[in-house]
Image 1 (spheres, rainbow, N blue to C red):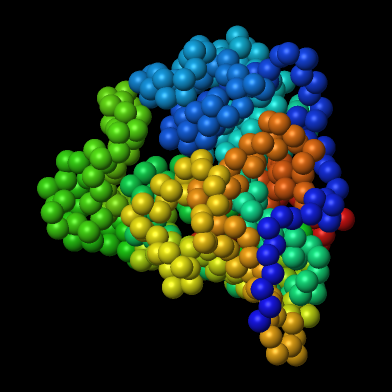
Image 2: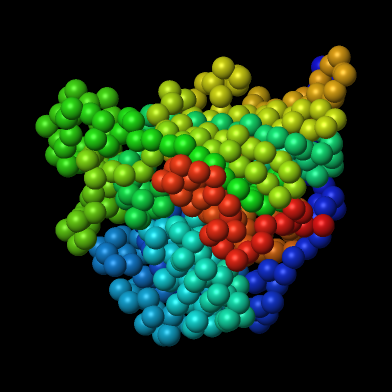
Length: 465
């Protein structure tokens, strides 16, 4: 075995720059980028709120916040530490504040409404992933962007992590030759995985299922790593654990009579931020942040597997598990010259075991510090070789492996820092969700589904030259 430190990627390799919304917007000297945000939940008020304000106050300012829940809106404003106006009506906010960019962090199924409205009003958009939840809404966004001449940036933060960038760097350098197949397994633990079933994400009509809401992260990484686009998806899925699959249930954890015998009981009262954002404001919209994971109404899958064929000939075997004892992922790329494997947060492969109950909270923090003594490993072995090489990168404490803060810096400070086309737009947003949408259709109809059945976009064998 040979061990190599791979601490920093080279920007030059395959890093031609694409036109990005911020490149075409001229900010006057001494002025700031004016932002308006719709959706002031946990993600909106944290990464897109407090983090932006505390880290990039010298280049941006919030001019408006919008939400249908007036209590949560005021709470988020306080958490963010801003003094801008608040609105219940999105159109009024955009007309009055005239922002340079609208940030969309609402329920996934409503993204298209706000994206299209903003584009039609002549404003560029930054949207949380997934871009939207079905093929009809996807077309609405693509058509509106083309007609308006404005741009949509899709926030694929996982691309920007230190580890994932190094995987891209090795693949772009043709380290294992032409990739022919990939095995990709993602594990959500019984804490974080269960949380999707407590929230609005447990309903296909709101989040498009985890095939779209969660797996869009994973599918976008695949598309980016492979530098190609999907052509066909064949999938299987079932709801076998959560939802109706239990002999007792309640409305939500705080009021449940079964809390003493339910392994999935979650005491939300221990989280001051969530209590202030959600519990204190239930009276306005009735939304329960700690909904029961056994609700009969839950209709998403909790067991998922897919085979994805790419335009460049690669075949991917993918799975998503939602009730694993640990959280992490493993991937293997098979190439004509060798094989590359890597992983994140697999307990028996790392030196320091994680506290699984707190792991997601740590990951979602905006820390950008390397963990002392911890590295991410990428194993490469050449065909006919006796030994293999281990490439290492630092393990970052939080923020999606350092992806969150790096993405924000590229968007708001230096969009020309765009190695390997890491900044994403609507085409990338579409190609990631279309895999999940095709997977849903494949399960429903029991057949492989071609991407061209869902869109007039023609999948490219090579995304970027």
